[in-house]
Image 1 (cartoon, one colour):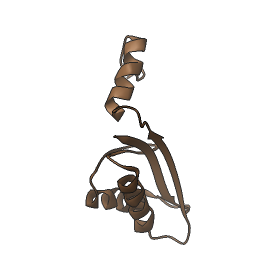
Image 2 (cartoon, one colour):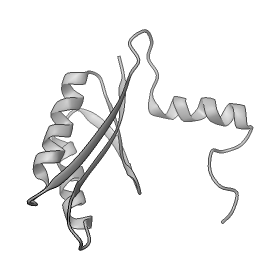
Image 3 (cartoon, helix red, strand yellow):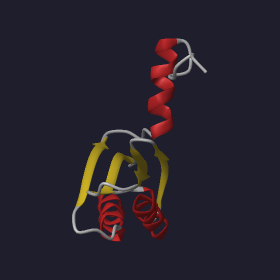
Image 4 (spheres, rainbow, N blue to C red):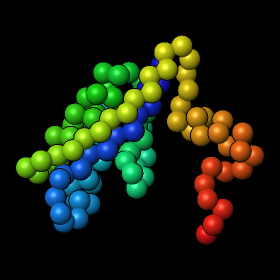
Amino acid sequence: MTVVALLSVAPVIEDSMASEVAKAVDALEDFDVSYETNPMGTVIEAESTDELFAAAQAAHDAVDADRVSTVLKIDDKRTREVDAAEKVEVVEDHLGRPARSRKE
């Protein structure tokens, strides 16, 4: 099974969050997950929810702040294998084009 999730971990601070977000992303390297970070969070793929939750916990714990905000959205499709890239490809098939702005 492939579990796909969107993880957002950030310190609640007024300054730049980039260095702390980088710590959260780097913590994912210790787990058997694939991931891609975008401006709104990090898409993670794992073989099990156990591995996904462990990776998310490590990312949350890696942020050094008095207050940390973590959001985890999970798509646990249990009846068949679907990875994140395939989910985007299906939408693009319906669009007939890449799923991104045509503006440069």
